[in-house]
Image 1 (cartoon, helix red, strand yellow):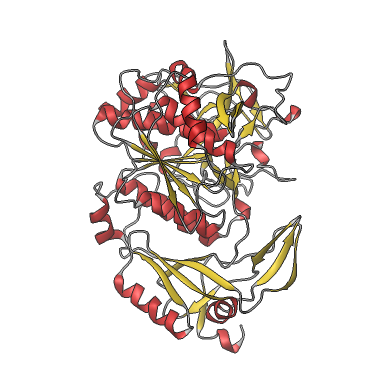
Image 2 (spheres, one colour; image 1 turned 90 degrees about the vertical axis):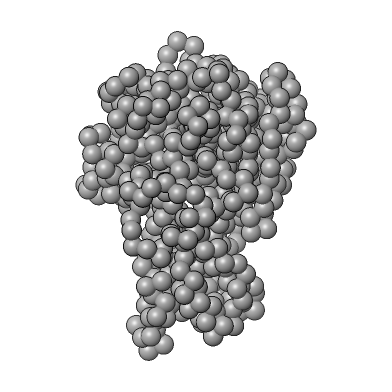
Length: 513
């Protein structure tokens, strides 16, 4: 360590290597602007883990007072910012985050990094290699420094059945979302009224006239939808991610007609993604009880500090009674990488419900695997980073690729094959779409209905869901098919988790849990 770093400590888990295929082309301009988010540790050492919490469920105000950032830690960070000429752009005590702005040169000096411009395929981004350093006095306070690297962090997990507006010859059937909900036994005597479902979007957008046309064609009313801007991003239709946004909104809106949707648009960076989740979780105005996330990337594309800081947010959700669903990915057990078995994050967080995919025909349901014909496959496998959670102790999760116990992905499943996909409307065109991006909002809609019927949020549902695996028929166990490295089997498996739902039986189980 150089003498200038003797007074500094590396932020644990901040080590970053340049992604394969990218190269540094020059140093980043020292005068260029840069904005980052510092994530602080909780003020209490009480742990929240394994998809549940020993704490009594608390409201957002009580949470901020007991589990948010300590104001004294924020004051220390403010002093650090002043010393290095950085401006404070935001302070969010519940989310334990502080925004800082300055120049690249100031960030280099403050965090002992060497930011550069990197080239990856046809994109250029600001990046770094090595570790991030903070003064010794701040080391116990800082959990993560997000945003020094501004590369595109996540991929949308959705698949359009057609290419260039042409349906494939292999398309078997398509469904309105509410038809699949009926197939899965969702209640018809509740519609999610009084609930807010948060949708996290890192690109794309929607046209309200498309949504009105879609719901009118489905003989449904148009639900209430609010777009929220995070870090300057906004509802911006006209790009390749519009199908992902439309699929999320139309899935929830068709199944949970009475629920309000809050769509949080953020930049597709590690910082933007974190801030969007935090904005939804700690939104005092809309107070979502469910969060649906259909973006992610293989674990090895994330720093450890990023995964741990996101996981801490998801643990906070458990304390607040908020249920988080994440798509498990659409590229099979390799997560689209050229070699090895990998799972997708944030689906691999033990505090979210990871959603895998099936192929749903008129008479059968099997593991979704259409890789051979270019139409994707469900993600699944065992985490290399997160340990086996308590709720999976009896699920016979295999060892991870490092031959160690790990968190198994997914937990649950639903129809995700674009060849048996969902009717949607995107940018003025009717289409068919799917992917595990459809399964997360499917389960989010069921949860909104459950929260309404139960009169309270179900919160972190993992223990109850796993207790149901061998009980009241709440899951249809998928035992046919597989993905590279894993086959479907009786009980939990790394293709479709516990299986697909019988919605009414799942809600009945939560009523008596």
